[in-house]
Image 1 (cartoon, rainbow, N blue to C red):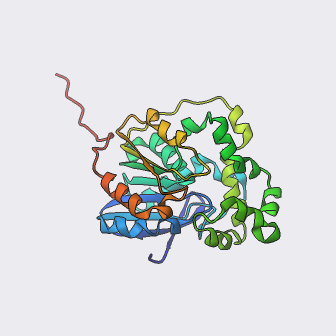
Image 2 (cartoon, helix red, strand yellow):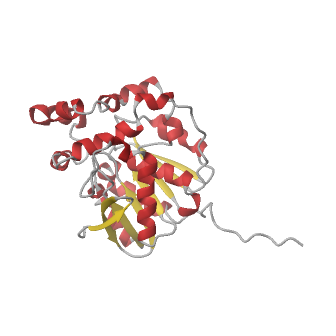
Image 3 (cartoon, rainbow, N blue to C red):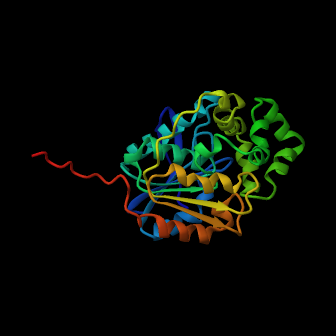
Length: 289
């Protein structure tokens, strides 16, 4: 992977990888990752004829890490992505997201229908499904509640050589890299603030707002070994997609699909991006006689 570049958007400095030429694909990671998550996808997509842009989202990797909870609201982070595309001259990217990156990609897709081509979401389904989770999903997402306690969560996760964090993560994802990344000044609080800003218990008391339909062709991918997110979240997401919808279940993968099944994910992405007619294609209005 080439050296990262830096750009200032929305009052935060973002590090990002920008490789290849052709239609732009933006790769969005989740917690507690960085653009390094996509190391198997970037070369495959570049070879497939795409320009690949993979930012370290705010709070992660080499990007800026504001310490205020309100700095991590979904709308703010979507605005980061929009500003990034504008500064890099990308009008209508393909968007691929995993974990929190998938949540951002969903929101971007229904808020910015004319600024997206194809949408691919890994592990995390549409927020409309997650707005009313089953009891089984609540149990699987217990850690989201644990992360809600500023200061307490940080201290307990770090205590005894990060023992609790290691138990939560297991040996999944880039587990050995996460400890190095989260040991950076402000990194752990920044990462946990994503949950505090967007998944607090109080958020469930707010009146539900209808979601605009996703018009872009959409691919949802879920790993059968995912311990944090149940299949119901992705499988039921199609009802929020007005454009072409495709769901793929990967049996031999867990939550970290880009790492657990890189060849299969690459094949799915390359076979999907650019193959469906974009739902947003502009048409000239008919002249009235």
